[in-house]
Length: 86
View 1 (cartoon, rainbow, N blue to C red):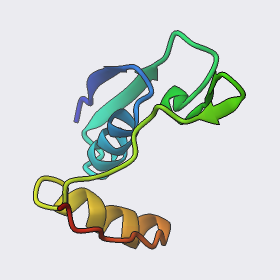
View 2 (tube, rainbow, N blue to C red):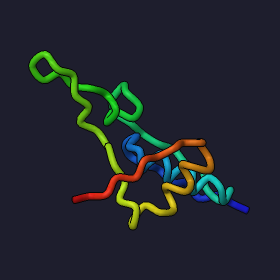
View 3 (tube, rainbow, N blue to C red):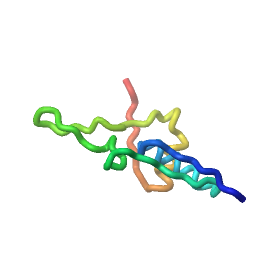
């Protein structure tokens, strides 16, 4: 069977999880392209005044991300904390 090529642009968290999910089917050759030197650049901190801050991805909406959250827990043994939005 001929595999389809999938190119993902940018090494965001979603690109990485999408690549992991697609790679389970064995039907695709997946490549992730990132122009910066930092993989998962959104987790790099920036300096504001004298403080370092992380402007990147911080939360998942449980309703939209149910499958992703289960995958994180099962595949990477990550414990997540749920916080109710007020």
